[in-house]
Image 1 (tube, rainbow, N blue to C red):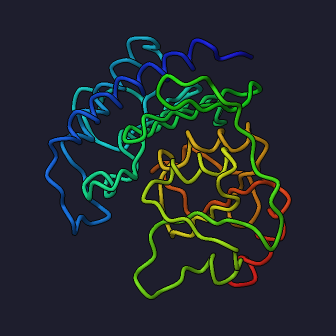
Image 2: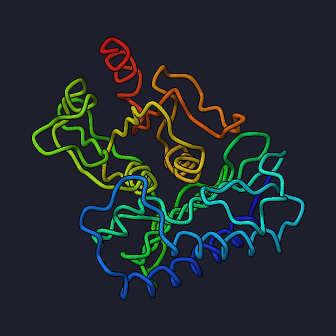
Length: 268
């Protein structure tokens, strides 16, 4: 089944949200010590814009999003068709004004991602995918580029992760021993990096995160030829009662995936 219209609606919503965010970003006062839990008025404004556009286009669809907005609290958050939205993924990167944040819009049908859009407002870049139609990226008005995961192998792999504390190394780095590490605040950006072939491994080992942290980026990786599972190698399951993911996430370019699962499992 094609989801052409849904993808166009998601792209338009992400584009308008990105424009709003860029305008706010220019005048936003930097918060150097912004905590990981930070939320801003821009998060809510972005989400309000996106949800209105999605609801106008598909009034019967469920809407699952990070921020609580009174106007949408009465709309179901789960269903056969569910839009999953993170209005600013990596708000810490926005607040610190380091450019590391994204807008994430995904569509689940029967619990499976079928459309995903990850927009990076600071870079004017958008990466998107539709089930069965591949993954693409555009920067500004540039011609679309087809995204494919890398062919790098063990010994030259690049791992993308959240910023580690100064002087400390993350468990995935210690266990998987990549040749290079990239750090960014946004999970959407990390997954887009895998899809675009800029990185090869993303292991989310947090005890808990949420559907909106990964849904849109999930399909980017798979449509670009990569592999996404939980840390035990099982399929990602969406729409838990609290929308929480407690089994981690592993996204790779493919060939190293099973080995990474084994190594991370052995490490505990």
